[in-house]
Image 1 (cartoon, helix red, strand yellow):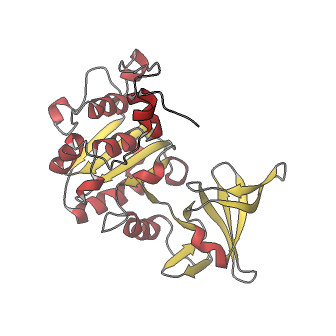
Image 2 (cartoon, rainbow, N blue to C red):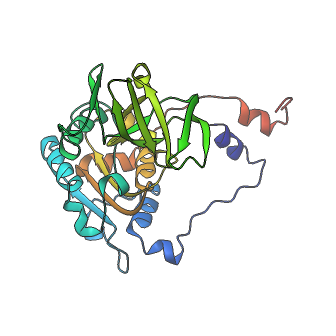
Image 3 (cartoon, helix red, strand yellow):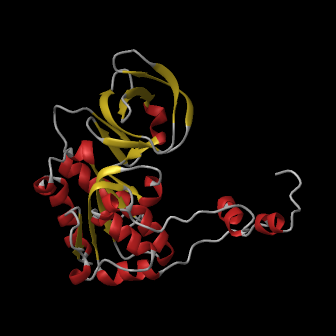
Length: 284
């Protein structure tokens, strides 16, 4: 919000990047994200693929939640490999705008855990509240912990601190010593006492909001019918631009088209723009 106020004050030089250059223009991901940012939807099949672009963007038109879930599980458990040598834990991330409902993160994580990392006598588990964590699970840190100790696998580097949004994999659950060991994507490993498990949650599926600042080789984006305040152009653009190599979008045409046209965002009023324009900043 502060950055937006500074830009809108027109008191500092601003450069707007609007042109897609040749290499980026070969990607349907980039082209469609750019189009969405300009209010143009990708749901029209005749205009979905532009000539000379890569096969890195696919749209599946479906609004029936049960069918979307089945397609998502099919893609996540091997079907997507025909588009590349992609492994779920190494390359693929599921995004959705909401936490609630059949296609929200809470329910999706339950279903994806069953499909991708099912219960086994060879895997230890720990139930915490209503959630069962299992060795092999993908998880996310959901609050900053400035004190937790970590080390790299070979012991060549140590430190403290694991932060909100970091994603990793449970590599050990010790029910005798009562701890969970997680290896994060940057290879640091940290141990959580069972009493600290409120700091993590499953991350087979995460919200678009939680994905901000991250990139993934493959993104499967689910767009269910949900609260209109979540179905905004800005959020859709954010989701599309998380994918580097392959993007699959599943959702109803009507819902996605609404999202493309919905530029309403939650506004917070500040006096910063006024103060900059009128040169009355005292302690900036």
